[in-house]
Amino acid sequence: MVLLPRPTPGPVPSAGPSSSLSRCPRIPSPGGTLSPLPGDTSVLAGLYGPAEVKGSRESPDGATVEVLLRPKVGLPGVAERSREQLLRRTFEAVLLGSLHPRTSITVVLQVLSDAGSLLACCLNAACMGLLDAGLPLSSLFCGVTCALDPHGDIILDPTARQEQEAHAVLTFAIDSAQRKVLATTTRGSCSAEEMQRCLVAAQRAADTIFQFYRDCVQRKYSKS
Amino acid sequence: KENCRPDGRELGEFRATTVNIGSITTADGSALVKLGNTTVICGVKAELAAPALDSANKGYIVPNVELPSLCSTRFRSGPPGEEAQAASQFIADVIENSQIIAKEDLCIADGKLAWVLYCDIICLDYDGNILDASTFALLAALKNVQLPSVTINEETGLSEVNLKQKNPLVIRKHPVATSFAIFDDTLLIVDPTAEEEDLATGTVTVVTDEDDRLCSVHKPGGSPLTGAKLQDCISRAITRHKEVKKLIDKVIKSIKPK
Image (tube, rainbow over all chains, first blue to last red; front, side):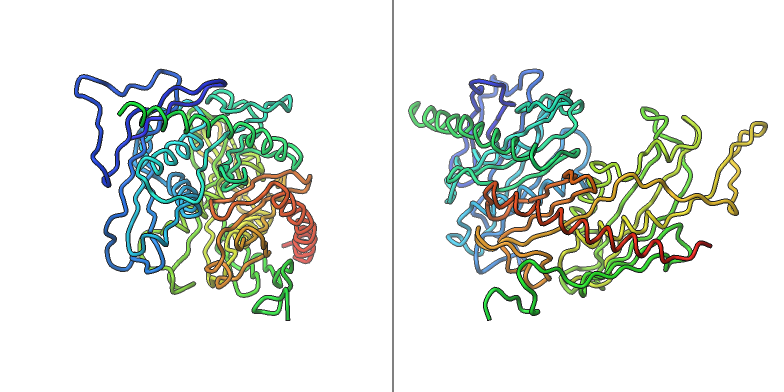
């Protein structure tokens, strides 16, 4: 399980232990709790795969990626399905699925708390999960949210309040190889020039996030 | 022949777009859009409801995109699949982001009565580029909607609907979607057919309005794109918007007022 609190400007808090069915899971001790701090966005990512896939969904060319996004309250609805599609296609773009044909790779994302920038948090959690599971990837990716406030300034990783007051909120999935855009989704309207400015800011912020991934993985392997 | 697609189009060429307005007489507004072979029909039905408690002065717009099994063999009958749900969410986002209709305009009496516009978008023939066709059908259908005037009788407190006096909706913005298929990080083709979509490694949909503002840049995963390529998509979307707007204005003008 990868617990990724919402990044605040500056160093990002550490992620919790990870698990996947392909290796021995390291669950937190019964005495310990995985409680996110109030005001944080937390998403738990569980990776299962490469595993068996049933019947017609089996693909001889590569792995079948499945994403399940569970909201904090209520049943998954149309909005969750739309996000699942975005996440699935993002993973399919980076995953070297042809190395595992006729298998399924399932990513389960559980929203623990939502204080803004949720989709970016899901992307980051899933990437760390994919890393932890040891699946072959062509590049890493990260999610960055930019909000355009009424003055036209860019706010990175906005809180829920800032997202509401902003006249546009753009979320980008940036890849680690060449900082290209893997996925984008927008809310509200903005000009093309503002979008480009946000993209540039997001590409720069991606550097911080990729450094955070390195630190996490380094920490994990240096312990044992 | 190079730089040519299976149906003979150039890489940046759109299919023939036709629109037919007002074909469904039982609906309050309707439009049929054909983008090449892709056929999408949108019907708008208006009903009355009480506004939500936290937004007492707003009505509702409820879009629903259906991809029934009759439009393509890839869709099975039963509950809506992922593509239909994702398309519905996309249309809902476009309505919200572009403010095509101000929800305040749908309110009849604060806290008591408001219009609910059920926009049902049904695909009759799926040949790719469902998002563009659906957005266009929705826009055309909303322009065609005529709402009866409603008054609230002060004595009884009931609403009275006057079917003889109808008013059109105030359409504030005209969002138009332009979709591209990405092949292997380098090639971008506009208005993909179903065959091209299946072979593509990614898609991008850009929705612009008449002020050249971006209502939505929808890239659900797929091959990565540089910022420059994305900008290229946006510029082409802005050009496409002008063509579509001209078409829709022409059609609206050609309808004889009832």
